[in-house]
Image 1 (cartoon, rainbow, N blue to C red):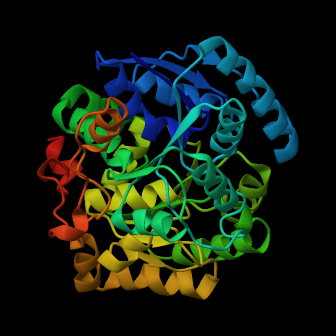
Image 2: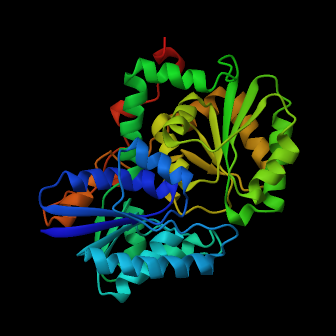
Length: 399
């Protein structure tokens, strides 16, 4: 029987790995263990609870003011001990975090096969995003299984002549989103509780949902973002909801520049269930998050990305996402366009998500179990949004 050890440590990883972990644990041909590094502690624990995942190993590596080198060294040493105890056949990691990079190196040093979920994403600029672009390239170099979310990602891997098997799976975040949206839309009591959690939301106003945390935007980038939001907040038809990242480089300028505005709601980072609810309630999403670029189009929400480049070109090609960078004027121009031009908003909302069909986890499990797999082939057919994820008015649904 094949033994798989899933390793992750941040909230985004946990969201995207949760469907894989639960699918693995339901498969009689596979034994599964989970190791979390605790790279994000409280936010990670929220996701584990939501998807009912109990780790077998927990490294709890986070410490105040810890640099990336110290964090990486601690992870590699800790994971080496876990691998010695677990003796997995395959170590399964996700994406581009320090956890994924450290697990890839530690597994490679022990001669353990590595499976990389969300393999092949590239900007081909090591500074954008930093350090994620380096992390994912390192993992792909040492992986035996490359689970590419899209054909474009698979092409990147092929062009680099890497070893290992490439399987196009779709993105597991669509699997996770499918499950959570189904809960919200089918459970009236849950929807009522979520409504009560955000009493400040005014259904008569358009909601701009904002998230931002990228290191490359620290300093001038976040100041420019806040300037744009402060100007946009002058509109009487708009409310801005901003779950503020805990990093002082983000929270500092955001609180200083936006904290006194009545229609700007600066709230704590949200658990995944609550954040999906906020995405459903939004009119436009302004973000630098990779995961949000993938999720929001499935909900029919236009996404403006506060980055100069993206490793997710499929969304740009499909028209679901537009890059606006961190230039104050550029952010304002594109938000105003979507607010004031119903046709522009409708076109971007109707664009179809190229990232998955909700079956990515099943393809990963079947590959690891040695079964035949039909790859995800969004580019071979119209990008149809899954019926169960077609945009609906959450306000209407709750009545």
